[in-house]
Length: 549
Image 1: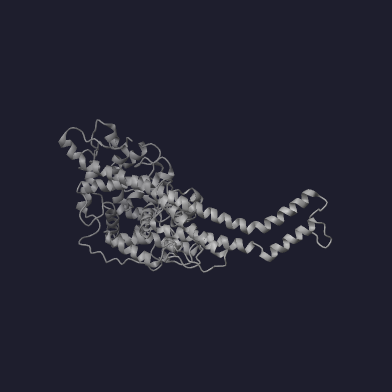
Image 2: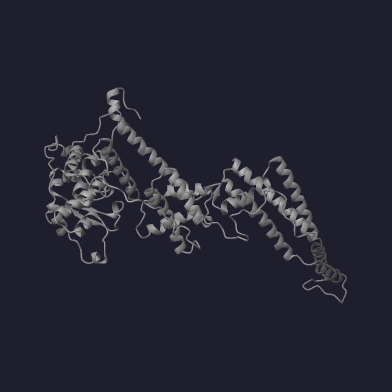
């Protein structure tokens, strides 16, 4: 990213360049995270090796048990051989059911079948000896060809991945070979009637976290995450795919060393919580992002019979009551300073088109603070406004916050009357002259609107902070929501009406009765005083410039 050849101009442009770079890095991180979760598989870790070894050892012996159960006893084999032999000799005292003795081919087939029954056990014994010898030799040679199928099977069943040629895959292959060698040795001992043998290879042992006789298939937590989000999106929630939660899920998988939700215990989650604190995460971040995401997924999995227990149910992170040294909203003086700066904003000029700020972002920096000031809305809700969301109704202008434009936290749409000062400053002219679609971002499809709107909101907040317009203790955009509620109370207006304008959920069941009409909302909006910003340089001739996108 070039800052030009002039040092003074470069230093002036540096904060914005840094903010842009941070946005790109964050976007790249989200794309990478999404891709890894989309794959639904986790990298193979050393923690998985022990389970793979024991699983293979147990599987080979289980196959041996099943095979022996199907094999006839020695006396049964001898009886079958005598039956077949006498039938072939046409001895009238013996018959072989289903055998046509007048047919020479049928008589030969009966002979071969009798021999096969008699030789089956000996052949199986020799086959195991041959495979045992081959495994030992390949282990010495460092080859894993004989267990490639078992490697793929283990990785698939456990939602793991290990690239061909990687050291992890080679180690897994060798470990599986050692497990199979031990199992074949035990099976050969069984041929001699010895059933008490134990593995002599120290690698082959039952993992401490695997209960005896455990056969339940792994349940990848990434699979749960995907299914949970799909279920929530079906009812209009998590339209963005809960991208903020992806980091939490991946962090948990890395911490416990595997991706099997069935193996994650309450103790694991408590230790994970403590690890997050050691890493410097704030108690609020741990509670509201990391633990909240896992708790929601585990609760859904338990309620839908995907998990037999909810290990996350009682895992909590205490949060101390935040001490505020000042009001959380902007004061009138602070709000006026922000609005003057936003209305006077001009993007830095650049001869290089790739370094120019997009028209959408410039418009957002000019209009979003003003819209938030007179609606108390979430900044992302204003950033996702489209041209069709602005309309005139009964001789006044109204904007609609619609889930079709991205997301609405409270669920459904809401209409908000536009304050007279917003109209006077040219917002309607800007919206009318804009192209169809989003006003403040360049999202092309409805599925990408929310992500684009959030990116725009972040750019505006970063700009306000870099411009030293945000007082300590005030959030750049959320400060407008606090101020709006304060103003409504000072005007003696109902909190319910303010909630309906701002998109806050009702506090009691009674709030669900009746509607807050446009007339009621307009009464509060019209009562809000304007700001002394008409003297801001360039306001009168800026309308045409701001309407160009």
